Amino acid sequence: MKKILISLLVAIVLFTIVIYFLLFRMYPQSTIDLGFIHFISSAPEGIIGGFLGMFVASYFSFTPSIMDIPEKLNTIKGHFKLSTQPIKTQGRIISKNVTAECTELSIHYDGNRKVFNVSNKAIHGSIKVGDDITVYYDPNNTELAYLDFYKSLNEDVQTIQDSDVLFKLIDITPRFDMGNNIFELLGEFHGGQYQGKKGSLIHEFPREDIAQYTPGRLFPCVISGTKDNYSIQLLTSS
Amino acid sequence: MKEYGIFTLGMGVLSIIMAFVHGPAWIIGAIVALPMAWQFLSKDIYSSQCNEVTQGRVINIQPSGVFINRLPLYQADIAYLDRVKTFESLPTNFIHDVSPGDIIEIKYSAIKPHISFINFTN
Image (cartoon, rainbow over all chains, first blue to last red; front, side, top):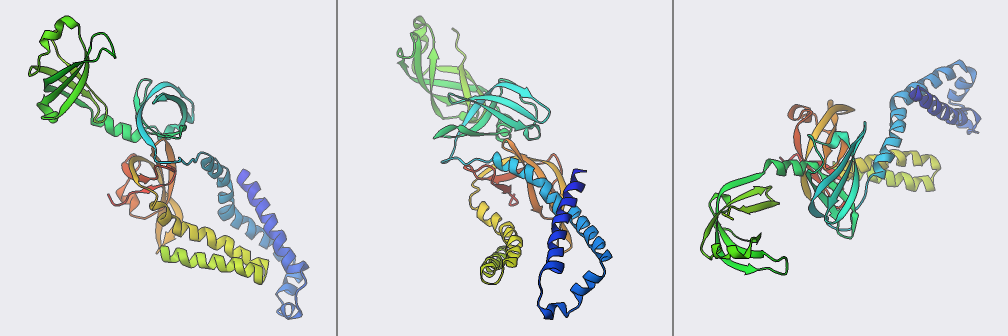
């Protein structure tokens, strides 16, 4: 019904313009002598056919474009431009509110919290509160941010779970500035995909266990997480 | 496509000049030619800005009603990042290579994420 009404309106506007140019505008004698304008004036029933033709043309060509305008304006309203290259980080879903059209996700990332209204069609698979998600944000305006469900999905696929790894302790440094029983362990990984790589861990243990952490000692460990964000757990007897 | 774009852009500019010189009716030519020129040229302009790659999921594919060399062009709704975008003027073989639900590569601008196109090179 809406489409028919818009088509009628467009046809009336076009028809009025055409009638003005054909009948009411003063033409030079040479144009009038061609006979076409005279023909239109003497056969007014043809005007009805012309109007119907315009209505049909409008219904199939102009009206669909006109009806798309609100949706296109709405889409343009959602566009934004970041001031510089975005920072990529992992955000965590704090809350989730699903409606018929979209999902409202409150996400915490790098000390900020923002509510994203995401179309349900854009969400792939199931997401739940507590899930990590890739967020890109403008370093000059942290409110300007967008999510990448598909990168997160990709990273989930590359989940690391490596328990066949040994950590060889090279050096140990007390980090009492961070806590009473906190030490920084510098070491080398052996086995699994991290063979030969060096790493440092912040580890908490009672001071009386310090004798266990002698340089050169090997500790079994478990590496878990994703490729960009993983944790290392030392399997000690304490 | 670039050649068509430059040609239609020229027609649009000519129509605007003629609208001032000859009569306002020429503006109709500009209204038709300039959007067409943008359609032809925008892909080249935008593709130079798209430097990031992500994945997108095809939601649906339908004919766009436009034919080139008697072959229909298609449009597809594709979800990428946190949005859904309709990619228009897709070639006929798109419907043979891709179906709804498929994951495909999308190139997009990191600064303006709404600017994107399907990465056909993969």
